[in-house]
Image 1: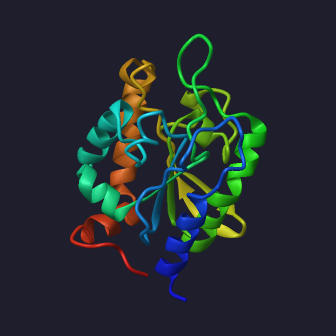
Image 2: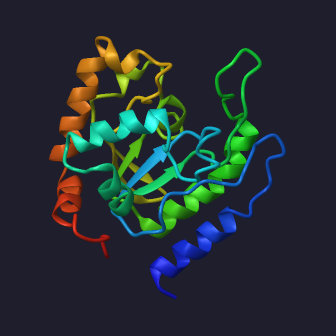
Length: 210
């Protein structure tokens, strides 16, 4: 069975998942494709589960502006980068407004989907977006400790570079005020200069094949 067939089967199974009673589906995934780069978001919002695709609303507009500045339009990014997340269903709203943060049980339950994608794709570069996603792999006390750096690590024996990004949410001012504003620009320069990102730019005309 080819790798792309395995990914398509994986996503088909994912969309049927109903293991978290307090989450709202259906589960959201990016395109089924093969890429050396994986973006890991936090969880879809209420608009994303209707569309359905990751980062399809306000935060996505900001996120794709960032990537457009380093060589990929939104369409190119969605066609060339595997888009994943810590949790795939919408967690619901908090009592006082804003999206609820998935709890530890929900994160653990959903982790099998993300872990399987990493196992299948064996990415060379991972871009975790937001503190929840970053903290699955790196110790995060403050975003300033991890943003603006390349973190070389191993996941189940797989050597991978991680370049964390702040969340592009309009509710957050972190990425538009200092020092976050400057650290974001430093991060984008690091991504653009990374050899794996350069490999993606060389393959802009079609989906990357291994």
